[in-house]
Structures are given as structure tokens and as C-alpha cells.
Amino acid sequence: MGMKFCSLSSGSSGNCQYIETDKVRILIDAGFSGRKVEDLLSSIGVCPSTIDCIFVTHEHMDHIKGVGVLSRRYDIPIFANEGTWINMSSKIGEIDNKNIKIIHTDKDFEIADLGVHPFKIFHDACDPVGYIFFYKNIKITIMTDTGWVNNEMKNIIKGSSLYLLESNHDVNMLKYGKYPWYLKKRILSTKGHLSNDDAGRVLSQVLLGNGEIILLAHLSQENNIPYLAHETVGSFVKDCGINIHKDITLDLTYRDRATKVYSL
Ligand SMILES: [Zn+2]
Ligand SMILES: [Zn+2]
Image 1 (spheres, rainbow, N blue to C red):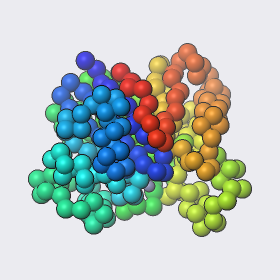
Image 2: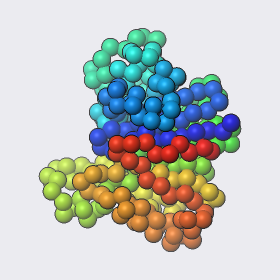
Image 3: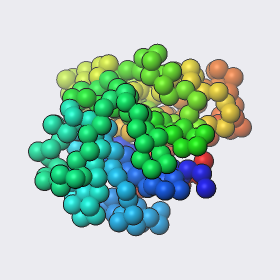
């Protein structure tokens, strides 16, 4: 068997991604109530008690809300770097010592047959990370909640079979929308979130057009429209000679339901 991926949901109200290999089943973030994560998992036929571990990207509530509950309910280890642990501990409740797993940004490790590479991203959290997961010759990138993607990050993520990439807002919808100025400034900053244009630019620099799957994630409900995100990103990708219907799969994630389960 290869690798399976499903975005259980993504957006400012909560983020939770699922990966499965022959030997492990993991979540990346669990930003909903424990009950909601259980429902999302059962919507794809996965029993929560079979989850082996949860990886946390950063301590914002839309990524950690259900982490503590799930860890206590199903005895699941939680992996996060030290900065994230320090900042999320008070928000997720007491965690059994054996389930506190400290990882280091930029240091590779393995969970059974799954390789993991946490890498630094730019966001207004203590020590936020994106993740690359390796299994056999398959590589998956999880990168949301970053206001900036530098060349080093592009090199790290290049060659992935699947990209879960933030496409948070349309710059004009945000600029002229009703968010207060301080919030607009935060989102637009290099420690905020990637716009549709940003996502398109990143993809046009990393995609090879060899069948990659791209899932646009963390779409703002207020400052984006799924159709617009897809169109905008698609036009950047087309401009570099990639046919978005034949060469790649360009799909969206949803705020309140799971995508299909992708087999890689
Ligand atoms: Zn965040
Ligand atoms: Zn977020």
C-alpha cells in the first residue's frame, strides 16, 4: 500500500489533516473539539482510537483545540517543538508525561515507516513549523499559516507528490473588506497568511507538472471565495506552462468537512 492523505477540514475555525501509511495513522493539528475531530475521522471511516500520534504546527487555537482531549481520551502522543509546547501547554490541559514528545525544527526523525521533517515557517506564533512527510518515494508537504515563503522553504518542499498549501485570502477582498486595520495588517504581514497570489507564485516555482496533487488550504471565510482561490492559483500555474487539468490535480479543502481520501 502507498500513502493516504485527507484534509479533514481547514480554515480559521479549525485545521486537522490525516495521513496513513502501512504502519501509522497520524493527525497534523486537531483544531476542533475532540468530538468534532472524532466525527470528521468517522466520516472517512477511521476510528479515533487507531490514531498513533498528533503533530502540532503551532499554538494557535485553530490548530490545537482538540489536541489535549484526544490525547487523554485515546492515549495519543503529541509531537511539537519546545516553543510550541511552552505556549500551548496552558491551553490544552494536562498531558500524560509519556505523551509529551519534543521535536526540533529542521531535525528529521521517523515514526515507524514514516519520515518526518519539521521546517521553520513565518507566522506570529512562538516557533511555528510546516511538515514534510516521507514514505517510500512519496513526499507530502503541509504548509499553512505562513506570511512568507523564502527560497530555502521552496527548496525543501520541491518534489512533493502532494502539497497542502495555504491560500488564505484575496488581497483586494482583505484590503477593502470589513476587518479592522490591525487585523488586515497582521494577515498581510510576512508573519501572517499566504494570499491566493502568494500560493500561486510559490506553486509556479516548485511544481513540475508530473501529477502532483495540490490542496488549497486555510481559506478565509470573510476574505476569500473558493472559486476565486482556485482561479487565481490556477492562472499562475498555467502561466508557467502546466495544464491544471492534465498535469496536476488542483483541489480545495473545506472549512467544515473532509476532502476525499487521496491515495498516493
Ligand atoms: Zn496561526
Ligand atoms: Zn491557522
